[in-house]
Structures are given as C-alpha cells and as structure tokens.
Image (tube, rainbow, N blue to C red):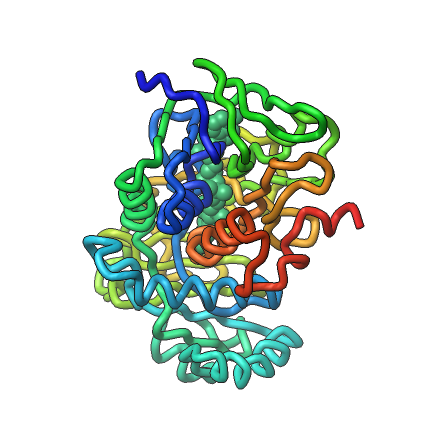
Amino acid sequence: MNTKSNFKVIIIGCGIAGASLAYFLAARGMRDILILEREDQPGYHATGRSAAVLVELDLVPSILHLKLLGGRFLRNPPPGFSGNPLLEESGILITFQGPLWEQVSEMVPDLRQSGVVVDLLSQEETVSMIPVLSPENFDGAVLLPKDGHIDVNELLWSYLRHAKRQGAKLRCKEEVRDIKTDQGRCRGVVTSRGEYSSRWVINAAGAWGGRIRGLLGYSPVQLTAHRRTIITFAAPEGLAVSKWPLVADLSHDLYFSPESAGLMASPMDEDPMEPCDVRPDELMVAQTIERLKQLTPRLVFKSITNKWAGLRTFAPDQVMVVGEDPEVKGFFWLSGQGGAGIETSSAVGQIASELILDGRTKLIDAQIISPARFTA
Ligand SMILES: Cc1cc2nc3c(=O)[nH]c(=O)nc-3n(C[C@H](O)[C@H](O)[C@H](O)COP(=O)(O)OP(=O)(O)OC[C@H]3O[C@@H](n4cnc5c(N)ncnc54)[C@H](O)[C@@H]3O)c2cc1C
C-alpha cells in the first residue's frame, strides 16, 4: 500500500461528482489528490443506477444552466478525453398537460436562444411518433432530438483515467469515519485503514453527505435522499421501440425508454429514505405496471427482466450544494446533485475546481449553489 499520508485534496466518495472534481483539479495541475471510496468499485451507488440521460429542460433556472454547460461537454469533450462518444442523441420526448404545458411552451424561445434544439409537438404529432400514447393524457409534448442517453461508465472512467494519469490516487474499500479539525479548520480524515492529512476535504459522499458533515457537528445543510425505481422488460412483439426517444409523462409520473433489447420504465418515485444500499420497493414496481396499464396498455409485459433502485439526494431548494462550508474552513461541499448529477457533472466539477483553486468562478453565480445560502 502507498504510505503517503499528506494530500492537498481528499475527496470522500467516488461517484460521478468526486470523479469529475478529481479530473478538473488534475487538469489544472494539482497532483496531491486522494479519492476515498467505501465500496469496492467507483460508481456503485447513484452513479451506477441512474437513467443517465441529458435533458436540457428544467424549471429550476440554475439547474437548466448547469445542464446546458454539461451538454456542451458531453457533445464536445476535450480531445482524447474518452474512447467512445459520451452522448447518444437518441432524443427526449416529454408530454405535458394543463398549466405546466403553457409554462413549458413559454420557455421554448429562451431554450432555442441558448442553442438547445427543441420542437413543440401537437398531440397528433406525438402519437404518430410514439403510437402507444393516448392523446387524452396530454396536451402537447416537447421533443429534444439532440439530447439522450449518456454513457455513464465511459464518462466516469474517463474522468478517473485522466485524473490517475496526472497522479491522483483512488482507494476503494476504504471508509471515511472521522474528520480531523484544528481551530475550526479541516486537517484531514480518519478512515477504516488509517489517517491522512489534507488542506481540503471534499464531501462528495452522495446520499451520505449529511452524515459526513454530521461528523463535525450539526450540519447547516439538510440533505434528503429519495429512492427512485427502474424496471426493465421485453418490448411487445411487433412494436419497433429501439429508435424511440426516452418518453416522460410528467403529469402522470412515468417514463420509459429503449434499454438493451427491450424497454425500461420508472414510476418517478421520490420516497425519502435513510442513506442505504437501496433496493426496489415492490409497491413501486406494481405501481409502474399499473401506470403502464393506464397510460400505454400496449406496453404491458409478461415478466420483468431486471429491476433496481437508487438514491437521488436533494437540498431543500433542489439546487446542488457546492462550495466551502460556512462554519468549517477547508470542508468543501460537492453534494445534492439530485436527479441531474450525471448530465451536469462536468459543469459542477469544473465550478468546484475553480472555487477551490481560484476562490471564484465565472460559470455560475457561486452564491446560488453555496452551502452558505442555508445559514444567511
Ligand atoms: C434511478 C435514477 C435515475 C437517475 N437519472 C438521472 C439522469 O437521467 N441524468 C442525470 O444526470 N442524473 C440522474 N440521476 C441522478 C444521478 O445518478 C446522481 O445525481 C449522481 O449519480 C450523484 O453522484 P454522486 O457522486 O453525488 O453520488 P454517488 O454516485 O452516490 O457517489 C457517492 C459515493 O460516496 C461513497 N461514500 C459515502 N460515504 C462514504 C464514506 N464515509 N467513505 C467513503 N466513501 C463514501 C459512496 O459509497 C458512493 O459511491 C438518477 C439517479 C437515479 C437513482
């Protein structure tokens, strides 16, 4: 085992958040980076369980801004960043009903102004594209033909490969159990295997972010993890689904999309949970089937081929928490990625690296994402 115990930055957690920060810090020349991951592989929790799509539409302006920045990186990563394309422009189709449809329709000119390719579809146009939908369930749809599936494995490992090449160290099966402080400043961590000192300790622990800050006393940020369930199943015979976009019905909480040889679907559940290695809830699986029956009866299947669940972790205002802790110097939040942590990872990783190295960023108003917003 490497016996080095002094680092500039220790990142707790090797999901997409920790990996992207390591990448951007290393790209700026930082060499002394240690990533600590409790599981035996990176990406075991939320990162490895997501639907992994880029959707450049969001009612929260700061999240939309981060998605747009993330989309640019996914389409045009730096030369040599990845071996395979990061984004498959398989498309996203979202149906809306009532006032939400009006609200979203009004956002379209601004989206186009930002460079997003977006079409508004009537009920007829939508049904001719996805014949299993019924027009009585929605007023219209937004099609984002240039968005779609992210190769999350490629993205995660590309961040890590480059960071490691620049000297960053990754240690799996090593859990952070305590944080060392001295005179109100972070000095390092105590793990299941030893002790390390560092100038910065980064909270990229996903659903465990609140517990990590709890090691230092009462947390100024309340993070809540919410379970989300996904099932996969065979597509009905005679229905060509492989070229479908991901279809989301926000009025009835259901999305489905081609996945491997068949389809996947989620009931968009949001049950709050204690952080854990979450499993799918049978009630949610049954609810997915029920919603498919009601909204797209032609998709009802004989058996489920796979099912899983993951945790999406949110701050109270649903915006990410990125920045130095208002009370403990050297403790840096990279948490609360919610349901957009993959698509925004390059933007958030770069912003975090700039805040750490330069103390400022031009990519976003840092106050909006700062943990200090909860103590002001
Ligand atoms: C079903 C589902 C669908 C989703 N769909 C999308 C989508 O389409 N697009 C999108 O962008 N996002 C999506 N997301 C959200 C996305 O997956 C998350 O925002 C993102 O993965 C969060 O990354 P993270 O690195 O913060 O957390 P994680 O991936 O959970 O990583 C945190 C890591 O910290 C480690 N850790 C915790 N405590 C300790 C400790 N004490 N010591 C050492 N290590 C520790 C954990 O083991 C874990 O590996 C989805 C999520 C789910 C569950």
